[in-house]
Image (cartoon, rainbow, N blue to C red; front, side):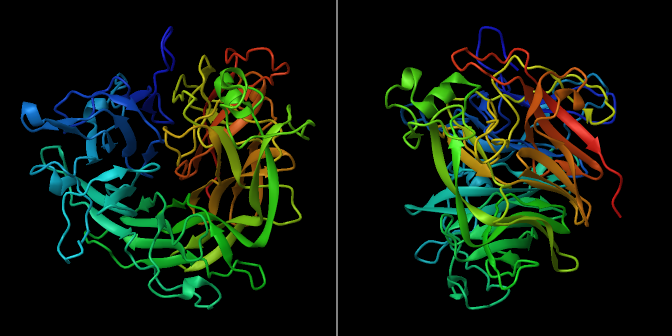
Length: 562
């Protein structure tokens, strides 16, 4: 939401769908951070989207704030703890009158591992051993990239970055959140699944075609995990920028450090339906239900260069930064922008950036029960279509997370709508196509971005799984970005950009400009999406106002897939 005369007010909100319940605040910028907090510190921002469990009322998110804990005497006082992971196991509006359940918030992991005594064992990085072979204690997490995952069983999983003896490292971690008899959640021991010192498991195929086959490679990169039914899946690679070894792994959260990793798909896995082709890249956004996982992958050496046009509408500061105009003129803007003498096809200006993307790509689903890999959808070198989307986002942009009123509609029932007197649009959205037509603007950053990053083009590929044969994915097809539903056999379009906003919302205006979906957004037979509508800005010299634009959170229910 937006306070008149002030800065945007952001927060985490929830709502039970299918019943007449109100919107419930989980946390906001004026919410006091959960204990431990002896400084009465308030939240400042929420740099990634919240995640919820499939069947239980469990919510987890990341929050940034000032230090929450002071210790030592007045002359040697130390203040620590400026970020953490938080959860709520009772976020509901049970009585129809509850509007705020932030008092139920609890801390899952805090940046307090160096505090001597009471917090060191609870929040320090687990599983570390020093050069002398002894347990290394008091190492704190620096940051928790992305968003934490939480399941029905009360396990929370996260990626964590830290510094061990001067060396930056990464890993994936979990802990059990068990509700005690007093109603207070008892934090289980914090455990590590894998970290930068973990040997990458032997490849599934052992084809000896890549460096992957060299033993003793370790994880140089991990991605934010997904958890379900007491198990975790994550992407782990030897090198994030140029991976030659690694894949998607599953592990039990069984109260031990470094449990056995089961390779599901790796860089020596054959691509279904392709002759002698192995996966070259694997996407880090995994949707998982405990039995199956859907992911993006590419194959082959073919690539294509795309042009990403600087936004021509939306937040003026971000537009000016991309084009080095306004206060960023002549050379204080984005140094990656290319200035052409000619107007670029599909752009409203001659200013753009170039990126390289794979020609052959697709979404795939791995069924852990039957140990089978199946294609959901593919694009090949002959297609101008794409599954990788780009968003120009960053620090100059003031993001918004907001829910509004509730009604139901014949095509898509929706949870939220209102005129958008704001400077924000849905998360994980990207340009309408790779050539820059219908650039999508005023968006929240994707689920792996950090608030401190300056504006730049960021990519993501997103699919959401309800079960192994019931999947929704996002792709560019025939010039429009759409959400597609796959029922195990065929795919059908659900909604796409360029449609009239009234197809989503009776009160909507303009055309559908952007669509967003998160990996946890498909539960049972119900899909939740975010959509934004707007009139295209024709005259760039005219300041664009968000007044009159439209957006909201919408639901669609599918017939059950057997």
